[in-house]
Image 1 (tube, one colour):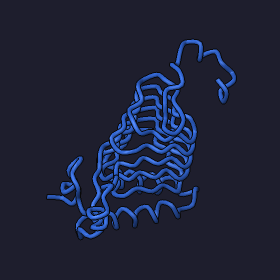
Image 2 (image 1 turned 120 degrees about the vertical axis):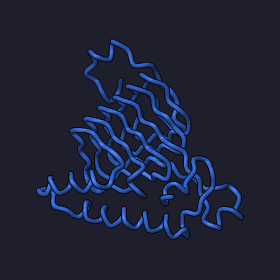
Image 3 (image 1 turned 45 degrees about the horizontal axis):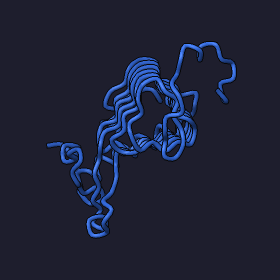
Length: 197
């Protein structure tokens, strides 16, 4: 059984003191340290490192450094994905990012959470629930997505949103907590006021 197999979706596990889990996270951090400290001129090496870290990824992946994650192997990314600076993915559970997704700076995808009661939390216990970002999603700057959330195809998450529940397809959503603002319509193809519409 691998270290990640010990993390069963929705069940508590020891993230801080289980030696296998700690070692797996350490190996990911070593790769991330190298990736985040490479010159932008070393784009081939950067791509090799990120592909070696992630569970799977498609064609035309752009990941701007710095990038942070816990394990890497639980992250699966589709084709034509652009990830801006300071993405943090806590991938105790799987994170699926579809095709043609844009992720702005300072975004957090957090599959991990902790018990509310102090007795279990002080033992270092946590749980993890998967996150799914479907195709053609745009995630604005500073968005936080918590465990178990799915963001539907084609939706846009406004900057600074805290996403605590599923977002359906083809909507603009924003706020804390994140709520649907409106549907995306054919009229949006003609707008030139992207920031206010």
